[in-house]
Length: 260
Ligand SMILES: [Fe+2]
Ligand SMILES: [Fe+2]
Image (cartoon, rainbow, N blue to C red; front, top):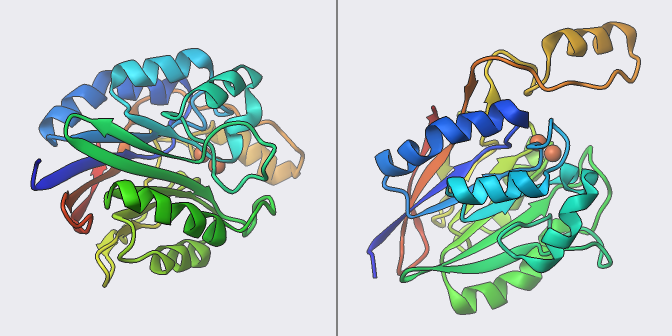
């Protein structure tokens, strides 16, 4: 087994521009970074809202080992049977019981066994089940299979994100925030050995308002009307982190921000 494992975690993919950035840059990024495993948040792939079956298939073809998501996962009905039938695409674990799909997985890839959990915060978001308690419940089972556990914590609030990371410090390899689409510069290894970043950032148009057309976003602010945002067009980038971890202990060794 490899001594160190290198995992890419990629921030929310926004619309066709984000998918295009993955198409152009993901395979070379994986090669340059010698990534063993790729986790991509795909909740905004379908024109900003949800993910289609073909987005899912294309992300898999482009090299995603696991696709995570968030609050927008429910916006394209066609993905529901895929969520039910596959555990390489996740929806947040802490949606209440009747919701379709899986919130965590343990994937085998060569000699590697990697756990991925997707959870969602509740501050300034829907009051779904407690993410701390729901993750606590599944973590024991996952750690029986592997110490390598990567969490996409899809949340708005920094305090909630940092508290969540410290709650699981030393028991998961990484907690990476998603949802705000703005990459933060606070990547670090917590005292117990968990890699952390408040937000992975955006895989989408660079000159945009969290991936959306600035003109529409300004109009919305000026009028306070519920103007629907539209995914921006233009030059796009991939954002995320590369995490290196000790395969035997599951502790993170390094975390580095990426914009490509
Ligand atoms: Fe998002
Ligand atoms: Fe979101």
